[in-house]
Image 1 (cartoon, rainbow, N blue to C red):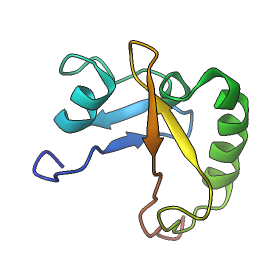
Image 2: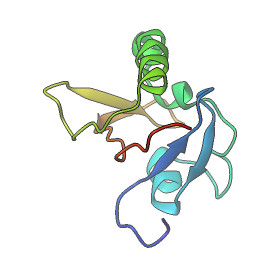
Image 3: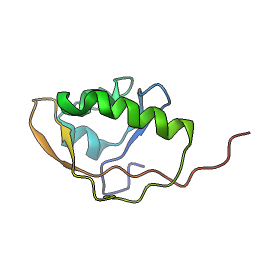
Length: 97
């Protein structure tokens, strides 16, 4: 994940950041390792956080591939509170056993 030129953040079912690569940490304004364990909603503007929780729960209830964009304008929030346009994608999911 560290070699990918994009910011990557991996989130668990509870919305906790399991891994963030160096590009993501720099983009969001955090030191190495600081994002791990934080709520992913801390990276979302306040007015979108509640909706994000709902979308995250729906996704984990029925994982599916989400292509970038989807016609939805998304924003993310840096540590300093500034915002920037963002895309969320998900990998092809594997069936649960």
